[in-house]
Length: 506
Image (cartoon, rainbow, N blue to C red; front, side, top):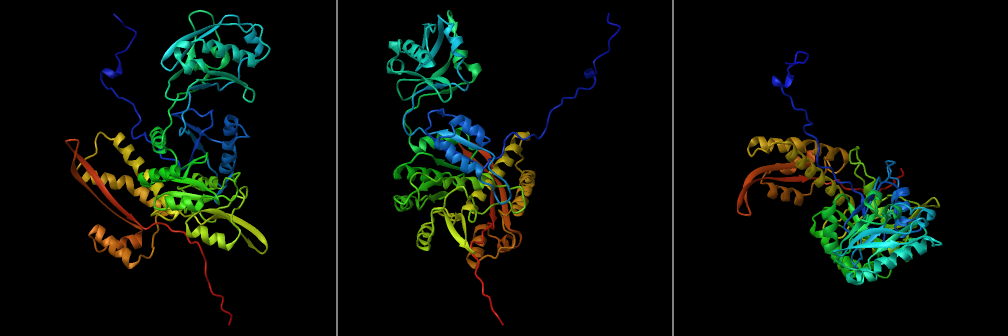
């Protein structure tokens, strides 16, 4: 019998520790989502970069991606803030072959020359094949190493063009050896593993899982809608998106239609040129959330980077932190408009640009006019609503995840009031909601009709907002579920765009 121990305290008191009320859902960042056809970007994957140096190391400082990101990360807001992140998604409007691209440099050539029986197992297009008998003892350079591997991969004639047309090549800039399938379209590829016999070379090439290579699946050409649906499904953590490569007017229209259908989730930015701005504007004029940005220069001055950076640098937790688009500066981007005639023409079409004016002989360039196509004209108002909607969605989701259940009675309504009260207060502090805004008679009548409350407009005018909420049953797939509905009416924070005055001398 034990005489030196003690009875466990848990026999009498058992306390389970855990973190309650922790946030599981994170808020959306209003960063840019760049859609790029760069061959290093994997399909079905969202890449995120937190600074221009990391971005440049991945894409190269001579790439068009870097040229865009340099303007984007280079923007400094009036609050002395800059974008903290950018994300990238693969452009699959054209079919893409599966590929493996190492994230580390290939091993020293001397190490490879010691190998006479190199081998690995490769799975591609649903077939698994052992590549073996790789002898690098007489190679003079990395190109020869790549050639030997390519010949061995192509030896799998039963794999069709995907295998027999595969390319293994040495990239001198990154010092890596990559593998690309010989046929574009849907095809799965897996990071190679060690063979049962022979010397495993996957780690030396940077191809095995442990070395974290880029492993990209083959994808058949997608429409803009299919591409964006996949993009959004993988991650909705962005405030605006744009395609780096040029699109046809038809593709631009499809992207605009997709954005419009998402009901103020993000902004679509499209660069337009002197040769196509009228055609494009006419095609997308009716779609909400589309920012057209005029660029005078065919070789791309990247003015649309500023359209994305303004919101990525915003601080919605600060007093008056909700930015306005117009009058934002970035002297690293060349202006495209210099005269009143072009100014009038573009602003009349709600097309944005970087325009140059002067004061006391000093040239001043800034983003203007900050308009969008579609029903919500003001770019700032639109992006503020993107922020506000996401803020409420995140708070509601975290509450659902934290509680055992959301009550259906008065307690459920009170709970909703509690979690939205701080959001409504913040929206008034940061300028998303305008307190004391004078309403027109038409707006007063509309609010009255919408709410059935003759005094609702007074609250919107004096306090900035008015909310009603109720819980009611609803049939969903043949099952009765209880739904909390709410209607939030608020006075949007507008931007003063012009000052007119009279100087009267007595």
